[in-house]
Every structure is written in structure tokens, then in C-alpha cells.
Image 1 (tube, rainbow, N blue to C red):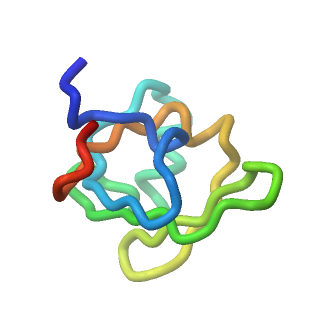
Image 2 (cartoon, rainbow, N blue to C red; image 1 turned 90 degrees about the horizontal axis):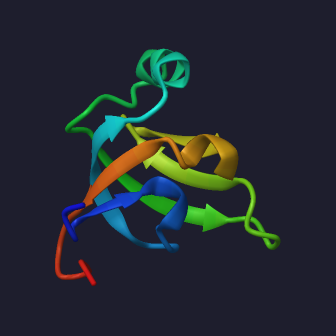
Length: 83
């Protein structure tokens, strides 16, 4: 996998990227309806104390996702943080 592509569930607070693709068809339909469209910028803004759920900004609003949902979202990291 491209080093700049990560799972949304693996991003840390403050990391930014662009939605690249989804790996689950049914969940992708739900996320597309909520504005999670490939090419859309995202940023992780909060992570719950136990790591679940996570809050992201996307399409101008804050969306909370379970880690079990975020593992199906591939994100292309933007900026210098591609390690």
C-alpha cells in the first residue's frame, strides 16, 4: 500500500488527509450520504479517552465514527506526516 494511504482509524488527533476510498460497500453508501466523498478533506479533531469513537471534520461539520467504521475508510495523508 502507498505509504501516504492510511486507514482513518489509524490517524492521530490533528492529522489531516483526503478521503481516498472505502473498503466496505454498505458502509460507503452511508458515509457518502453524510458527505464523506473521495477527495474530501478530513481532519481528526477528537479521540475518546478509550480510543473509540473518533470525531472528524468533513464537509464543513463534525462527524463522530466508531473505530469499527473508520477501519473501512482509506485516507491519503496530506502534508509532511506520511511516515
